Amino acid sequence: MVAETRVHPAQLVLPVFVQDGISSPVAISSMPGVERHSIDSLPSLMATATAAGIGGVMLFGVPREDDKDATGSHALRPDGILNRALSVARREAGDRLVVMADTCLDEYTDHGHCGVLDAAGRVDNDATVGLYVEQAIVQATAGADVVSPSGMMDGQVAAIRNGLDGAGFTDVAILAYAVKYASAFYGPFREAVASSLQGDRRSYQQDPANRREGALEARLDEAQGADLVMVKPAGYYLDVLADVAAQSSVPVAAYQVSGEYAMIAAAAQRGWLDGPEALAESVTAIARAGADVILTYAALELAGRWQA
Ligand code: PBG
Image 1 (cartoon, rainbow, N blue to C red):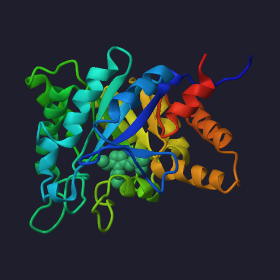
Image 2: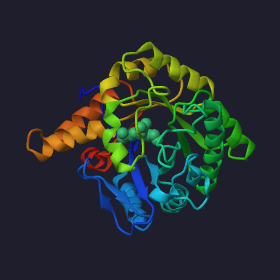
Image 3: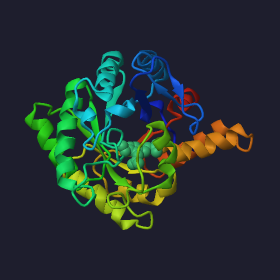
């Protein structure tokens, strides 16, 4: 009766990996219970997600290795893996689920960075933003309700908003990865998407030591027209999440990332933790800190637990 926080299934978003060139789902060894889906297995997953009553899905594309190149051009092809997956998901979702697209190039570049590189090998912010705008328009055309720039380039939200509006997609929303730390907890994700990254993303993601900078990044994205702002990772950044929730005029999302999930799942496999309890506790804590929307690989299981 007096619980201050209750998580509703509609607040949960399931991240989904869709891989090109496979016919049935493939397990991801570092994320027990999570699979890469094929285009063919996506409709049944969408049906499961709809029945679970979750709020939406966030789709990531995993291209064939030989489709990667220096500029991530596969991401801009209407017949690219993510864009095909978005149209299948949109068709299956009806009015019941929000279909979100990861708007970033890292899955498609042969160097694994989130953008294109300049002559000195550094990520070129402005050239990358131009590609994100094109990518967002292709994703909206494919059926994305929400595009989700996750590459942490400066100015990406305003540019995408202008681009979408100019192309007639005034009602496609932007979920901005506003606050995104350069985190070791993305490790399993990089296996999940077969990332080619060598090195790190510290020149464009944030320093885990910085709290005020998180609130600043969220304000900048809100001013640029973000419809939701996200904090990522979630569980180790509850202070930042609470700051952002306190100042934000738009809904706040938080992403319980692959490493946060994998730690619990791995310990549960060994019998060292009660997996369902630990997952429920961790997601409740993220909601308690102020998240309106939570992306978690455990969305389906937790929706079952919290169904009204
Ligand atoms: C970038 C992106 C990443 C994640 C989501 N979008 C990886 C990164 O920044 O290296 C990580 C998600 C997770 O770890 O679950 N497209």
